[in-house]
Image (cartoon, rainbow, N blue to C red; front, side):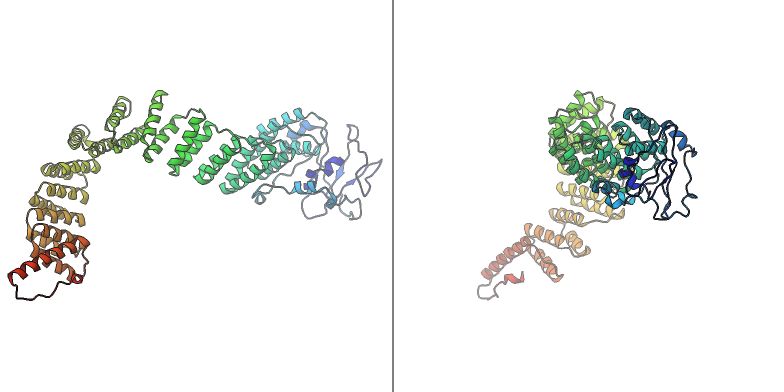
Length: 588
């Protein structure tokens, strides 16, 4: 009894005074050293005076531990009402020794809570029982069974009774009790048991995982991170942290995609000498990929391979995507081959990303080798696959092969044609100067219901420029305006260059006069006129440009200065007696 009242749990209970009546003896004022007998023949009645406005906990001494379940169901015949007994009692009767004289460790233990847990209070008030059974394993099994059946009150009462009796439940029972509290939304009670477990040194990685997940759910991920950092510093002395706790925290960081904290936890795991598992690496790769940190995901994969762990199929597919984003096609191809060797089947995203990466690197043969594997599997090529293959052929300079593949797609997979495929085919026509083919593709786009953008019209006009077909370019331009597609600067530049090569000077001047003043168009027109020997037209256009307040570029000024000097020398030779004012370069 003395140990029970002096225990830290006794401190937390709001018991201020005891009035215990015995026919043999009573408590003295200054101590609790009197001997108490709690046999079956003599059961004593304990009365707890109500000295404050708060509701006092009732302490019940009983030897019948097996009746705990009945207590939870509402059986209160063992609970002695003492409200009427305490009326009229005076403060000078039977004082409990002042709590201020207790040991410092006991006082601090009563108020110890994890970070941010002060906002959560306990709901349950434990009822303490006298325990005839002293076997800790037997009592631990009872707590375990009560927790599994969600007998929250009875399990808590038995746990606290063991605590004040100096008995220690085993780790399995304590973890089961915490899980029971969390299942039934008793967060404060779970934290209380957790603090007692830490004080007794019986925590494990599973204990920390249960509490951290509960803190993240109730108080938020930031609170869980703060609590983890505090527990990690404490655990370095106890060495009861394991990789399960780190995995739990990494998964909590994954809720908010907090890749910065996840990376720190990963580094801390390695620094503290723990060995990461396949689950650890899988969680890290998932967080880094969702956060766009492809380089970190690759680092995690490389470390996993160094530790001789086998990655899962989903991780390997994620690494293929990460490698292609970083331009590391060799690693992506290596992981792809490893998947095939392990009997895994890459998904369409892995196939397409690898084909696209190989095409950008100029590895056309490897790209079509992967494409053949894709066709032999149950994965069907889609518009992304065709776009990757066409781009691979285009960047490899195989324009005719790209057009042949485009025609094949149009015949067999017409439903998968889109504007990207059409534009790639138009770029191939531009390289080959096939203006008639480009016009045909443009007509197919319009008749097929595909939205024709200004970029598509520009590609056709550029093809006409390459093929020296300025009249066709003007017709495409007029058709473009008729379709209510607004031309841009690139459209007018291509038109001006086409008209210059076709010596359509009125059309050049008309385009420059019609379009709002643009320094790029003036520069292009002046360059073309100077190169084709139209010096006077270039000079007029140059003066008009300066009158509009536009500033020519360096090349335009150099061309005008060169041609004006030639014109001055030629006039001086024709009229030697006439004096001319020297040319001022600043006017240019």
